[in-house]
Length: 112
Length: 116
Image (cartoon, rainbow over all chains, first blue to last red; front, side, top):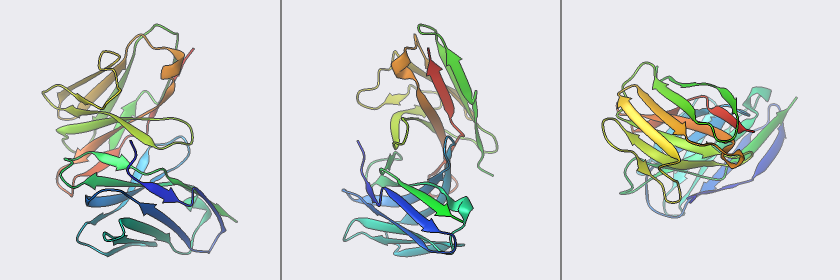
């Protein structure tokens, strides 16, 4: 079963704009991770945020985590055509060992 | 670092045959690897957790006799789809847990299986 819902399901923006994707989950977590998947390829790990962290940055990526609302957001600033991909959040549940539970994903298209 | 490979990247087989997919962690040791299945435009669904030196743990609804998993070394796990049928056609992705970090998983490039 899937833990997370992501919205929007699909997002189309112009190059240079910012893209924001949201992830909501249902149960307590140890950490939340964001992954990118290009069409027909494997997943690339983008960023991990622990349950006691509120915000994390990596290059053009900014992730926030609100455990009271059970939600996270991924912001990609100054988007590029190469950012076109599907983005998934995934959680490690509190007490759930090491299994990742994936959200439904957001398909991002960045147009020139 | 933290590179995971999968082989083959793509396989087409006839119904009734068995197919083996390999997952290797190239530059780190992985006591735990995971196997996922992904249908077009959908998310990843965990099939099983592969533990080095012990039996795999399968998720509910996944037939262990259909999807045989072997994790014989700290860098290799294999998934064998036995007596494959067209409904087994899918994208299979493995991942390896990187214990040196926060238990991040690093993913292989996936294997596209088509059963005719």
